[in-house]
Image (cartoon, rainbow, N blue to C red; front, side):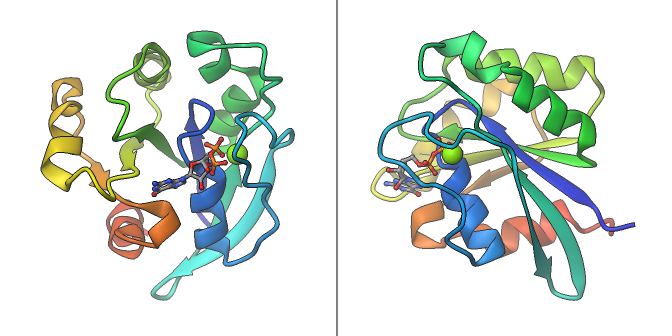
Amino acid sequence: MVPVVALVGRPNVGKSTLFNQLTRTRDALVANLSGLTRDRQYGDGKVGAVPYIVIDTGGISGDESGIDAAMAGQSQTAIEEADIVLLMVDGRAGIQAGDEALVSYLRRKSKPFHLVINKIDGVGEEAALSDFYGFGIDGMHAIAASHNRGISSMMQSVLSDY
Ligand code: GDP
Ligand code: MG
């Protein structure tokens, strides 16, 4: 079975940017405004010899904020479909309420997940990571999706069991 990886997280953290890097397409709608990717989107990628399916999530109207946005039905469906979830957060913004809600949700569902700390360009990896250590998550990865930085080593680690 090809593993399914879902990208979830608050609007504007960089999910569609990562999706584009992983699938090497420009199909996902990367917006400067949050919430413009309206539908779940599927793509496929490969790390080494291991193929995977990746799901981008959007479906945010723009009216929701914080926890409501993070927990939009779209994300829940993608989480159910996924073998592994990549929970993306903004390394510049630090922990937000929506991030905490998603961590709790994933733990409640016993869904394997990794924490992806994005936008570390310009802030420095250690500073970006330190805010999030309190979650106590084993799999933490610092990346800069728009700079294609940290992505391939992250995917090797995420899919090491496949
Ligand atoms: P989504 O709503 O989670 O899908 O977020 P997007 O992928 O649409 O990205 C939101 C904004 O963050 C866009 O303006 C991206 O160009 C920007 N962005 C994404 N990744 C990075 C990154 O690694 N560094 C910086 N500085 N900006 C990023
Ligand atoms: Mg998006």
